[in-house]
Image 1 (cartoon, rainbow, N blue to C red):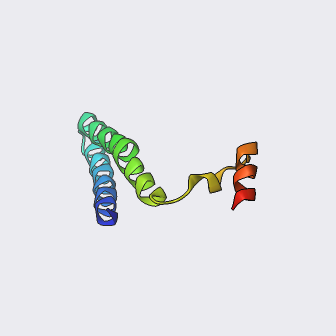
Image 2 (image 1 turned 90 degrees about the vertical axis):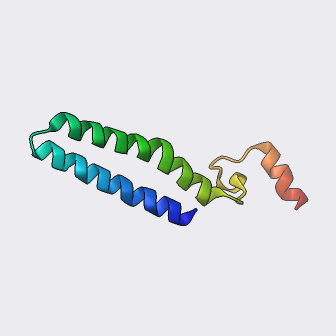
Length: 78
């Protein structure tokens, strides 16, 4: 999973760089499309994969900012 995330990250960085190259070489429409698809891939593919990888197997109740009454009861029982 870690290698897939790294490969996707570098592929997106290369795609953004390629998009800017196309913008500078008098093909702005193609460059904007490449950058747009790279940003969509970053937001809808890479970010969820990263979050799934980082939070797999962790108890997310420990990360709550405000603890509710049910969290206090669980803490007393442990």
